[in-house]
Length: 453
Ligand SMILES: [Zn+2]
Image (cartoon, rainbow, N blue to C red; front, side, top):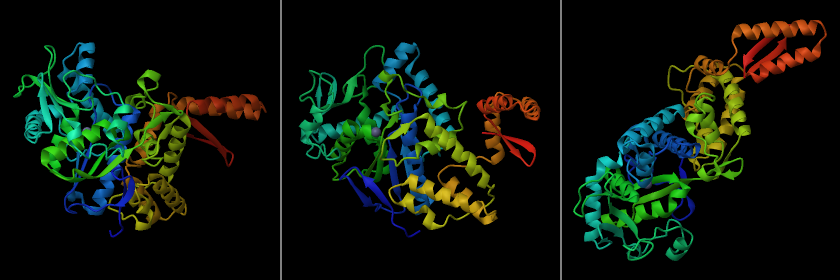
């Protein structure tokens, strides 16, 4: 494929042509979950977006030439806090939440990344990087804590495009008497008696959160690589800190070349936050809505914009997938998608533009040509949609309804009787009752047919 590929780069704030360091070795690192609580819909957005970016990169550069690393943060203050509250070990908690996270990834139709390293399995590399930072005079030891001295790194704030004092003024920096300066951040800290710990040259302790991404990116992708992704909320301090640590430890002018950040999710135009009580867990949807509907909803807005999550959006996406299955055909071979349809994805992963093209392709399937159905299905599959056979999709919908086929046909019989008696009020009431249970009825050629919504 010759088409150029463009991505919005937070570093510099422009849309840029993507030029890989080595087109046979594309590297992408995305910050993964901190496994202290079940993933919510806000966590689902980067999962799906970077899954699609992974697919697009593989399509452009070849399956074997793209490495996607997404970490699991399994040691962190929130994990310790949550395990104490739940009275279980941090290990028990993180294993359980990691499993739930993986289940959610499958539900959302996401591919596994090439590597999914855990922080606790890479502590010795973290100690190595801290040693390097001390040696290069960017980090200092005070009272069993190691801190990174931010002002020694001149490019701090470049990703946010803000000066250091602006960044500090706009954030809550952790206050500690152990720090030389308020903006310094912790690389290593001592563990309390009831907390997990690892041996280190500075005593028993554990790493700071920011450090693990620098270490795991280096392990799998090297000192510099192509794309680093995550939610926009990670730009400061997390990604600024990653850049500072990596560049100062590796003595390198670059770390990741392209920084890709997705926007927030709002709930009926309000910020989603625990304090607002409007956090929706991914698992809350599992019994009600097929994962493909959620997937479509998550990419219905461009990844850079904020996405408003509301009932109407879900309903629209449900209707779209229902409709699209009418144009579906089971594929037994790889079917090429004409380049003109892929174009929006190569322009900064414009998923709404691609969805418009899917609607156009769907319209073509209505002429009944087999080839059109194949292309349409292949184009949907490319972004992880219509990945279930039609019968599985219908089964899912059927299982979600608590009405049996016998009850439906009985109701239809009753309704037709009412219509025969010209009792249109009753007939209408029965139609509505069925609709509430997800059953759509239609009178066609003197017969009444029904289907699940
Ligand atoms: Zn990270």
